[in-house]
Image 1: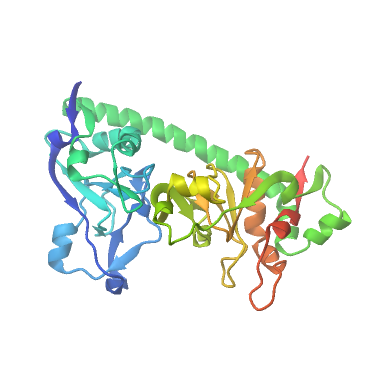
Image 2: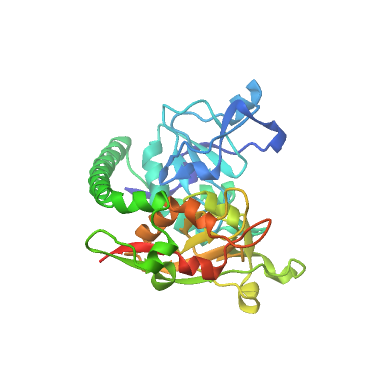
Length: 358
């Protein structure tokens, strides 16, 4: 083993393709975004497609063995990377990513990808530049990323051992999912009643019967319920910092791990903003469309606006509370108050009744 830098084994690096929204079409070429990189792999979800010419596909196309590295994101996520597998549909990549093409005589893509997975995000979080509320890294910074090298046979052995261990981990996760599925079946009767409106706030207040070993509780009894704020847009000292600021549109995804807007530490000191830790549940209080009543979970430390209720709850209870709120979405929407555009408020959120296993 010897120390080296990523640039020592790179043939080429290229920033991705930018096109206006008018060029995105349903039958276009897939364009991978920062959201499609997770845990060292490409996640094929929420795929955006764009019109690209044959020349653009040649210039920005992804090949098996390429590495895709996120160059613009929140500071804690910039630098995440993924290996391009052989089965990927011909795709291009957006401008917030860098394509890394390696010298196959020097390094195996998976060997380098595992090193980026292990240390890339923490390394770049401390070295990234701050640009208009987002952190960014350059090709030069990526080339300087420290790696270790070995001969190709040793690299293959290491990759094989890592994949064997990951396979065991996948098997353990599958077993855990089976256990959770059994637990879910055990709770089916209670969940079915909740989803179909047979369990609600009124039932909690009246002490409606529950299966043996269950009792009534409420969101207010289980969680510390709060909200956020919107700092004055006219105050430049409040915006363009490094602290994620989440709005209600984020809860359309089950987890929130990135932000589009950022506030400063000064805004946190001078306004009603609160920095909420990962694991905080978010419930949208406004939105006559499909947003009001939606629940999501923070995976990053972030502030929020006033359209979101924040639920800080014991980790042992959090999965059940999130599951209940997700399944009870229609019931939550129905308790909203107001006229033309009914809204939820913190009092209504606290009063939501739910069954809790003793």
